[in-house]
Amino acid sequence: MTFLKLLFRNRLAAMGAVVLGLILLLVLAIPVLPLQDPDVTNTGNRFVPPFSEGHLLGTDHLGRDLLSRLLYGTRLSLGVGIFAALIAATIGSAVGIIAGYFGGRTDNIIMRGIDMLMAFPYILLALAIVAALGPGLLNALIAVAAVNIPFFARNIRGITVGLAGREFIDAARLAGMGHTRIILTELLPNVLSTIVIAMSTTVGWMILETAGLSFLGLGSQPPQADLGSMLGEARSALITDPHTSIVPGVMIFLIVMSINLLGDGVRDALDPRLRSGALSRPRAQTIVDRKSPVPADDGNGLLNIQNLETQFHVGKRIYRAVNDVSLFVNPGECLGVIGESGSGKSVTALSVMGLVASPPGVVTGGAVRYEGEDLLSANFESLRQKRGDKVAYIFQDPLSTLHPLYRVGDQLMEAIQVHHKVSDKDARAKAVELLKSVRIPNAESRIRNYPHEMSGGMRQRVGIAMALANDPDVIIADEPTTALDVTVQAQILALLDDLRRERGLAIIFITHDFGVVAQLCDRVAVLYGGKIVEEGTTTDILDHPAHPYTKRLMACVPELGGGKRELAAIPGLPPIVSDLPPGCAFAPRCEKATEACKEGAIPLEGSETRAVRCIHPEEEIA
Ligand code: ADP
Ligand code: MG
Image (cartoon, rainbow, N blue to C red; front, side, top):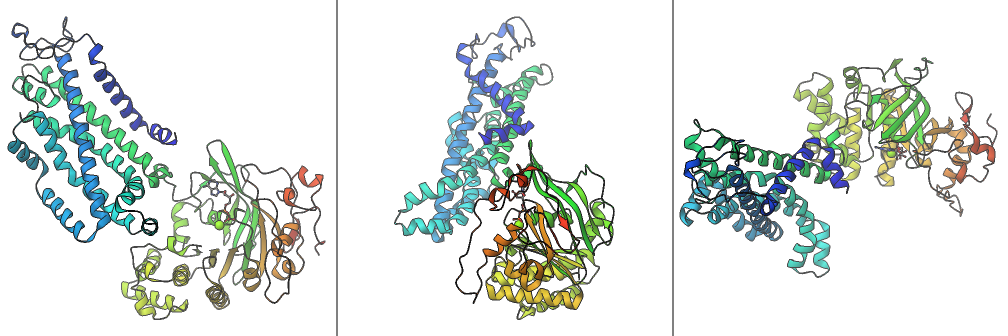
């Protein structure tokens, strides 16, 4: 269902489908259409022009009805092309799967054979096959199928090799399945979409190739009509009676065009990477569409987020991921942003540098000021210069941040050279120095490592080194230690702490862990449902949480040496941001909630340094 929807959203593919559908319909209707016999000659009626009485498309050099020959010929050409594609796909894929699955010598022998087939230009190979077998449509079909086998074999083998080493195949082996069963039930379903894609994009070619052989007189034999032989026979009358060539020519064009357009559409709709929205690739900068006036600069902090509002517009639904969030951070300061998963932490962080994927993301209000300049109204070039140079990010998953195919040293050098004119030698020296500063041992040799050669903790440190590469003023760290074990986490927190003291770095540290906040942060903002529900200094919040949510969140953290204490999970689920309640978003999960909590918007009350958004706070804030 979604496949068809995706397919038809692609207009060209839809057009291809319609044209191909019409042609198929005509061809299938041949038995009921009032057509003349395509092979009956009538030499007295040669070269009748199109739109004549009794001959809608005219007649050919033997006086045969062109419309009738066209439809019969199309049926034959389509049939042969599609059948050849099926044969090539079946044999090629089987060969490819076997080679890829068994590997080793089997793979070597099969693939060298395939290589030999591929060493010949394929039209030449097809000609040789037909020459050896003798002319005829069936032999042309065999030839076209044979020359296309290597294409499928190579394609499918490549994918199978990747799959054969995966854990689910090992698991199937351990479960005692035989080779045949593994191939049929584990491998085949995984490569099926690739086979379909390869077929849909090559069927057009195969029709052309069959037509080519017939054109040369090696395919269908007279009087049988197919599109290629019709063209071949019309060649001598090309100048005097062009309609005899144009009729089959246009049909070949229509068929191949429509199949290719449809094939491309099928590929785009089936390919999981393209399906996830690559057809609408996000822009380099989040769309900003502010409905309210830009808030005036209040002069807070080095990086100052004011009343930020970021939404995702998906179809008719609006996901309000960030609602009226104001945060600022001073040089040398660490601001913690804490909240459950889905509370809008990452989206807030990404909005700062316009990194929210857009579409569907839209910044609908507020301002983000860096040294007073509003980044949301900045043009792309000025934003690009600041990204990584002034404001850098550390992301949660170092494996997806680092490019798998480049050495970490080269990636570090690139991060530097994007922003500064530095020679390779100096950049390399800087890269080594950066790795040392994040305490990676043997930095000189480590820069030649690929990401997969490093442990998770080391990769995370490379991510941090990359963020530090250009001596940024602000680092936004989005759960940078979640993937790490506690000892590495402690080292990385100590490292970040040193850096801000030594270099005066401002850090926005996103986490869901109060333990981490206690170690590193000066101030904390608690996020819930895309809104700040409480903010204050770390000591204030840890010692006197005012919002029931903060209190519950802290009760979820076990304390070493804190004696036996019941860990209380928060009941219920975080709110769905496409459907936020009018009042306090936490009210449905809160023990203290009253009717008033659910009625209207509740303001964030207090001072700039300590505020809470609650009508029944746990403690009155000072
Ligand atoms: P977290 O606090 O865990 O970092 P996020 O900031 O990633 O949470 O997400 C905030 C909210 O935005 C979530 O409720 C999520 O469902 C929503 N969201 C994020 N990305 C998209 C998207 N591409 N489309 C729709 N909603 C999204
Ligand atoms: Mg997140």
